[in-house]
Image 1: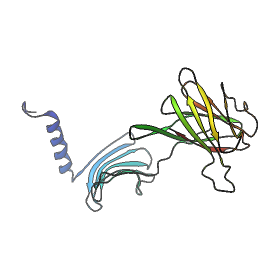
Image 2: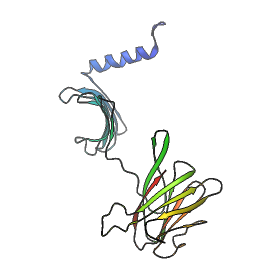
Image 3: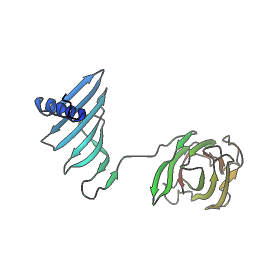
Length: 227
C-alpha cells in the first residue's frame, strides 16, 4: 500500500477487483458456513447471503428500486421480508416479527419511542396456576394489561386493567381500574402460581420486573402495554 492512500480505500478497491475477476461474485465457504457477496442481474438483487449449515439463509442488500431489505429463507430459494427500508420517503416496514410468547418465565418488553416517550409492549402465554414475568422499559409507569384480547365476543373474556407499577428499589403495584370487577387484583410480595384466589389474575412487582399470576382456569395470552 502507498503511504498517501487510505488503507480502507485500498482494501475496498482490492475486494472490488476480486469480485470483478470472479464475475461479480465472491463466495467464502468453510465449516458449513457460507458468505456470498454478489449481484444477480436477472432479479436486480445485490447483497450478502449468510448461511450456517442446513438450507436456511439470510439475505441483506438491495432489490427492485434500490429498496434495502433483510430477508430470511428457510429453504434457500423462497425469501420472506423481515425488514424493508424503501428508497422513497425513507419508510420502514417490518413484517413477520413477533413478540416472544413464553410460559412461566421472564420476557423483556419491546421498546418504541414516540415523541421522546418510551413505550413498551409484550405478549406472554401463561399456563393456568402459573406465573409469568415481564421486564418493563423503565422502572416506573403505567401498565395496561389484557387477558386473551386477541379473541372475539362471545369467547373474549373482556378482562383487562390499568395498573401503576414501580419495579425499583421499593417495588409496588396499584390497580386503578378493571374491566371486570375483582378479575384483576394486586399483591405485595412474590407470586407462586396459587397465591391469589381461584379465577383471578394477580399482579405483583419485584425488583426489575412485573409478575402476572394466571388462575383463570386455563392457559391464556396476556397483552401488556407499558406507558
